[in-house]
Amino acid sequence: MNTGVFLFYAALVLWVPLFVWSIRSRNWIPFFAYGAIFALILNGRYVVEGMAGGIMFFTGIFDVVSHIGAGDDAAALVPCVDNACTVLTGYETHPSWAVAFYDRFVGGPGGRVALLYGHIIFNTIALVTATIQVFRPGGTHAGHAMIGRVSVVAVVVSLTCAGLLTSELVEVQAYGHLWTTFGLYFLALTALVPVGIGVVAIRRGDSERHRVWMWRYVGAIWGAYWIFRAEMMLIDLLVKDMEGLTLAIPSWTAGLIGIALADLVRRRVDRAKSHGVGAVRPVAAE
Ligand code: HEM
Image (cartoon, rainbow, N blue to C red; front, side, top):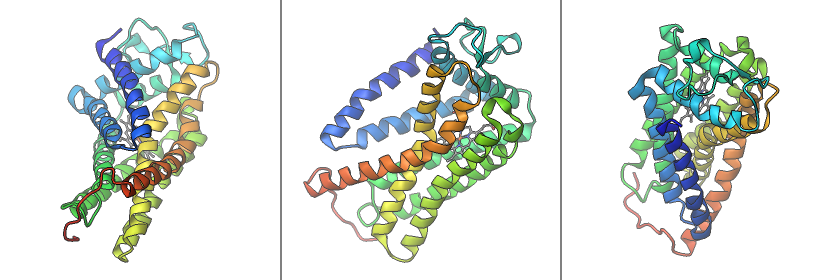
């Protein structure tokens, strides 16, 4: 197996005990820090290795799960030209959505590639900064307002790029065409609505409402990244004979699941704080 793909699965497995520890200790900072750094490394590959290398790695990750319990000829698996779309060339077929993803960007128009870079870079900035923000609340941590502005601008730029890319997807059968197209617009709304409400709340001086909606926004962003990809893996593991579901189902569900989980985590963090875990000293409000 390719070393990078092996390390990806090893890092995923190591995250599980951290999750269990966070539930028990009610200290979520190490869990979120791990996930943010993990996303930074994965998404950084697109910048370091180039678009083709990033997509080949992504396909390799899914080659593993999609071949568990399936031969090379399952209906949702297809070959790609010269078997060039993956880092795991031992597999001769790949999830059809991954082959379509490779074809869209490798040899695709430069503007499309630039939009994907814009989306990946700015949404990674948004994910990392928004996560830092909920654990360093305003009024208790210097720089909160400035990092918050960076985060909001980043998510707006990123989702503008994503929206433009999504407008092309009706044609892409392997992605789940209309279902996924509108699902991705819905996913973008699950992040934009909470962040919009959060911004309006703080401008009106309602810091508690701001805090609650920004947690939901962080949940949506984490949902759109981590829960989306976890659902994709589960679907590729379980569904071998139907294409389109891998992107269609997460696009409608990942953001909402993220928001619901963020509410649960926020309540646990609040309860832990009221018992003195991770208490912070206030500084002058910004
Ligand atoms: C919030 C809603 C989101 C929407 C609507 C969205 C939409 C999209 C679209 C349309 C694509 C390209 C598919 C194509 O054109 O063929 C894409 C790919 C990608 N997006 Fe997003 N995205 C969202 C959130 C995020 C977040 C939060 C991150 C990172 C922190 C992210 C990182 C990526 C990456 C890295 C890819 C390339 C595939 C991969 O390696 O995962 N996206 N997204």
